Length: 264
Length: 277
Image (cartoon, rainbow over all chains, first blue to last red; front, side):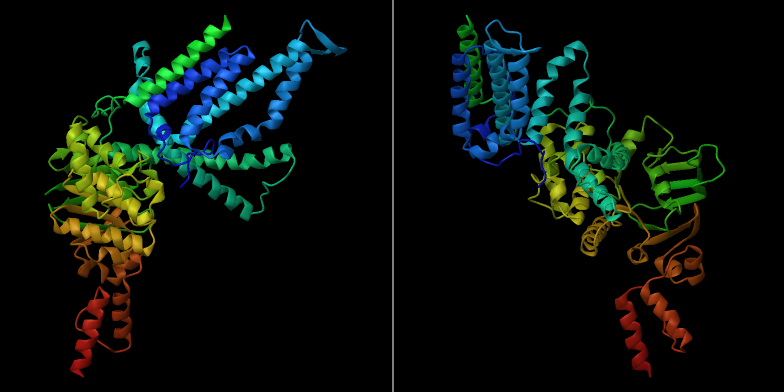
């Protein structure tokens, strides 16, 4: 089965898999706040230790969980160097023209890299234990409060759920068009980034055309099945959060609180 | 009459000169199995999209289940009584899970939540897809996808079910699956309107409406339409194999009793002919 490309869902029955997706998304957001709020080594240790718990109970293989981080190694190195060399710090260790290596710069570099790594791990934990469809339904109920400021949340929820449904068929269509063009001599495998970008251009137009055609057919099919608007429909019943969902939320909030207490 | 249409004209370029439908009359009785047969561009798909008001009637009159398709207030009710399965199985799913997709139509008509799961399950059972509730539509075969799409229509229990070339993109097995269910629904009393360019699929119908270039060329039983070589030639269609063989045999001086439409009838006719010699 084709799923979302990033942070592929791995089926399982762990407590983390069984958590309500709404609770999981909220926990992820709270823990990400805790990451951004960290300022000292202690703060990062706290989050890291806190993350070990969900990693252990998720029983996910460690390698794919950190694979995304490894793939970004080069990018992270660039962030580290940029910060270390261009941050205007007080304790200068060495300087060449505008380039200045400072104690604070190195610290800042490590901070940002740690932030990115930890947030990636949290995101991965979420998507690896939650089906895209569960994420979609959870988002539907999480955006509900936006109704107060006039956002048509029913419509947005409908769009989210249709969009999620479209991803696999759109990927198949892209693959098909790509193959049709390879069969006629197109080359997508060039090493040069500029050449590769140019070779993808003829792919973009037909993929868009096919996407629009699909959208048009789908809207006809929706109308034929009696769709008028997102409001006049049977309401989905939301299951209440279970005890373990509240436990996970409490845990995340606690970590976040300790983080901000450590700050002072 | 369940469907009554008179002088229907339609042009995609509004007010244009090229008409997709010209003066089409349409009469379909309750419980009838009607095949609308025609080559590509004959207007058959355009015609049926009028039945559930997906296309707005430009000229002429059309009443479906006593509802005037021009009446915008009742169009929504009309669509509940007149369901439609589309050609491309991948382009009609709204939800990423089978049971949610089937529930889509029910939710649109505000069917109470506690009734929905029962109706989803019985609809799946009617298309012989029980047990597939939790599957993702994109993991199913073409025939299975179309049966799920049909279950989504059946869940609303419509009187008329339109198959808009619903078998055109399927492999032979998938086509057989869908045709089998089509015939089962017909026996259960539903009015079936099947659009196709496969002459073999039209053989089982009660009535064939033969279309070409936006006009109705002929309307009658499969026996009268499919065995008429001139008519079939005008419609740019090739008659079913038993019909072709019947006429080939005639040219060779062998006269069968009547023109067969199916292979079984062909075998029977040949046996009868042989026993006469």
